[in-house]
Amino acid sequence: MDIDGLQTFVAIAELGGFTRAGARLHRSQPAISRRLGLLEQELGAPLFDRLRGRARLTEAGRVFRPHAEAALAALKDGQEAVRDLQTGLSGSLSLALVGTLADTHIVDTLSRYVDQRVRVASVTAESTLTRDTVPVNVDAIVFWLVWNAEKSILEVEDFVQAITMSAQTGLRESIGRHELAQMITERESLGRELQRILDFACAAAGLNCEALGARSGISDLRKIERLQRKGQRNRAAFP
Image (cartoon, rainbow, N blue to C red):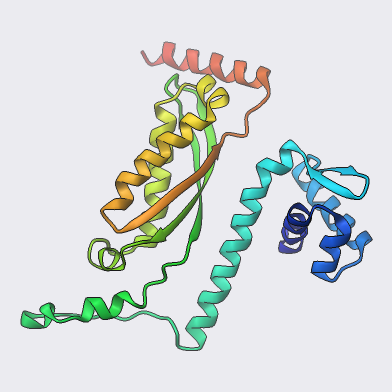
């Protein structure tokens, strides 16, 4: 899966058509179709319904879109971080304050340099047990920003890592509170539980988080039944 394929998919989704996506990306319509075809082949599912003059996202396309957008946003953030580092606009700075120097306005000064734009994090919980002991793989997208720069400096050593770890821990905790059937039929409940855990974890660090949603990737009823039977065997083996 390459960046060109993701950019092509997102452009079609945003603009609603292959021709307009080609104009944005400066590529011909056949080239756009070819790139999308390769992406669909790799994912094993069609991402768009081809209608006359426009393209409409399929269910697979709607599920995939936030992850594609998150990947492109993360790439852009990475490119900007490297560019800022090369131009001297960012880097590591270590300070040690002793005595009365700790009472100066240095924190207020540093707060102005904290990036307070919305950022995105993709988290995954692999082989996590549901409440009925069924192992599942679940991923989620979390949008977050620093709303209190002073707190983010003083209360947590690395707030970027804190977000990722809190989101992953929260996702695992939320999975453990739901049975497999609930995760499939009540996905909003899983998202709300993750949001509650993140709100508690982020508030103390001066961060604001929004969980876009969680996806288990399980939709086949027969597969669900097999997993539930596996969970029953696990409970019987380890009462």
